[in-house]
Length: 505
Image (tube, rainbow, N blue to C red):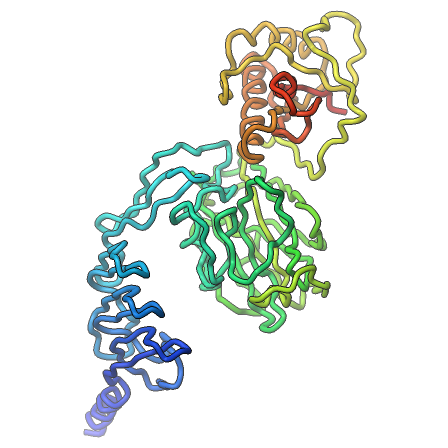
């Protein structure tokens, strides 16, 4: 009998604490922000806005713009108590500020079942769509943006939403801003390009006019809260192979809005998407790659470059701070800009061009642009490899007769006589070389670098296919960074479009 009484009181407790309430939240000006029903939990307090730990949404929820028009309608499954989370169930609808329906999604028992999640763009071109059908996510590609990089959208050039200027409030997670990247907790990294800005936040660095830029900003230290830190997780286009060496490379710089800088940065490669708490003294994950030097550069990008031997299961790459505050050196610095959003109270870093490449023998880790003033250049076609020529490491040799179609990286047959001479040079010497690709200044910096690297790789691949060991060749793509002459005429731009090689010291 005593046990029955105890069960009865527990049942009554559930009735007392799991009550259905209709609630409303307002904007600061008193206009309605949202309304709907909840099941209240034992520690529910209606003085505060919705908190999943204190109540559960049920039935229909309606959200409004400040002009009074409906922003979205969400539907949740009816549940009886707080033993379950809020469960999305039914048709969700989204409207623009003029009240026009712009998107619908269908949920079944908490699973997104059908949705045209979003269109994504390359510069201002529609590049693809991500869809969900019967609970399965799929991608429709309209514009091929594949590269040698194994990380999808590693240069952050693809982005969601129409190609028009949008000012974000800083509270969006990265997966709602760009495709193929997610936030492994509920914190909010930022995305920037010419059409994406943050409200009341100055430029993180000076952007030259008409210069393309695409990068992500993450807080690695936040002085007001201490343990708040942001992370981004990217998807690889295939799993890494066991015991295979890979090259990982990225660019990083401190925002000019930052009031702090630190000496810890990590890269985690994992089989699954990690689950990272929002605030914790030390993360449970140990990154395979740790960078433990001061990251205080505000004037320019620094390139970090690492070699990684895979375990054979890695499918995701996560960037952030994995060390505890006690292990981290925190330095205060005067912000160059006054900014809202507490960036002046943070170590706020910008990340760009995250690369993971399969063939490490063909790549160089190089943080500085070459000093081209000291480089003597010779046209390789004017030299005879069989002659007793002093082949010098401080000289670049231009492969003058190597040809490609416009905007392509496949070698044309007319290139083969020049490459045969280079093959002869290899057979008569035991040195290694670095092949560099160069473009003119037409096009974006990122695209030119990709094209120049692909052309250098095409020359390298031809040599390897014809018997040269891959460990004797490295490649690099400079884009338009190393012109021979000014890019002020079509004739000069033709001179700057070239492939060179240098003897490695």
